[in-house]
Amino acid sequence: QQQHQHQQQQQQQHPHANAHSQSHAHSHSHARSDTTDMERQIGELREQLSERDAAVSSLRARVNCLETQIHELRQLPTGKISHIPVDDMIRIMQRYGSEVSNQTLPQQRKQSIKNASIVRQFRRWNPNFFRFFFHHNGEWVPKLGREGELQRRIEKRRELLIHKQQQQQQQQQQHHGNSSNSNK
Image (cartoon, rainbow, N blue to C red; front, side, top):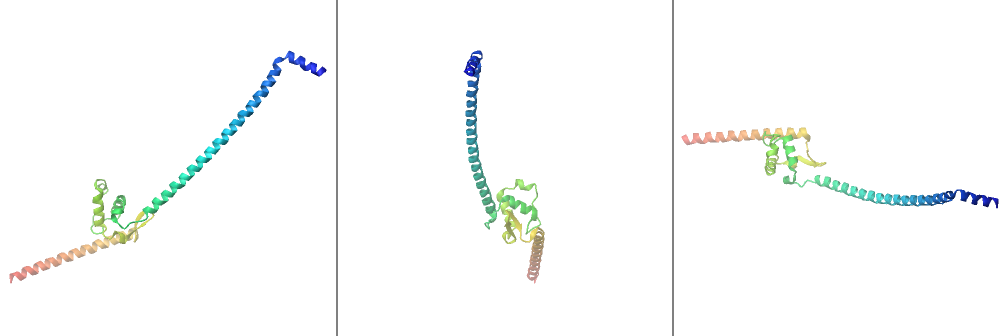
């Protein structure tokens, strides 16, 4: 009984103490529910993040697949000169020159030349292109290697020059032969 009386006296002397302990208990349960709400929100955000990561991963895989397809398509030559990209033609003409003449493609001219002109010139300069080049890793590569192709072109131009000179000599001989026959 004495203890009960003592508690009543304390409550009368300190009426706020009881309210404080009740308020403290209430704020503690409120903090617990706030923590639970935050944990739930964190869980939801993690789930959303996981879904987005899966979507990004799926899209990244699709992009990689498309890039692989593009790479493979660039490696499949059609056998038509018109299907060779113009930039590749320009690079080949600048690197290897003409197969049939001593011409080279000046750097400054490539901007001013129309694509159709480049294709025509490429055909003239490389009459047997597919015989001497193959497509490898997205690039046109000479079958004989760079030095071998340059050497082959020098030989080809020399042969064409000799052939042209022989034709001119034959024409001159025929012309001289015809004119001496008509004098008789």
